[in-house]
Length: 114
Length: 114
Image 1 (cartoon, rainbow over the protein chains, first blue to last red):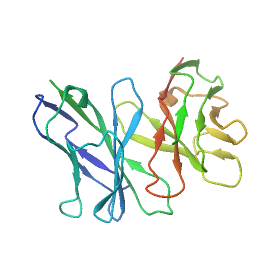
Image 2: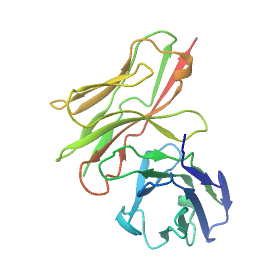
Image 3: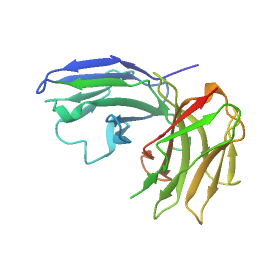
Image 4: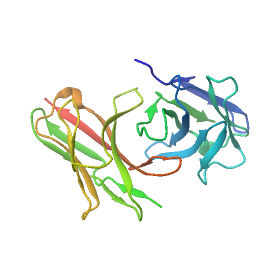
């Protein structure tokens, strides 16, 4: 069964460093999403991506964040200068089309900023 | 904007007992409703969804949820739980148009005791 994969499973970084979280969505899916969950809090929407551009982003998704689909298979989230409060579990999700509503989630990347 | 409230952060029950996980939502426009489940060390998996039609929806593993528009609720129930149902359960909504981002509740941890 096709699945969304994410690497790495756990990333530890120093404050101020850049990190790139990687996701491989399900092949032939067209809509891509990043969510995050700070420990003990809700899963929060960060950004959605369709047709090679951001379709919606949340207030959390400021200039420190960027997304890219560099090669038609990977979908990346970059944080340019990490802060302590960026420590969270980051989930990638993908969806087949606008009329098909199920988002398929990856297992997540746990980001720890020291 | 949409919001989702899951009233119980933790629900402990005995095996074979019934369970209800509560979910209320707020939205000024029509929404789709979802329950996702997260088993330990795994990603979020869709359990069931309400898009339209019959207000009672069922999953393949015995869970059901009922959409109640007047009470803006989408409670999840199972008449007899199993140890394998131990997981975190997330209620979520999305608006029908646009990027269809998911707005999640804070989750309910269901613990099944033998």
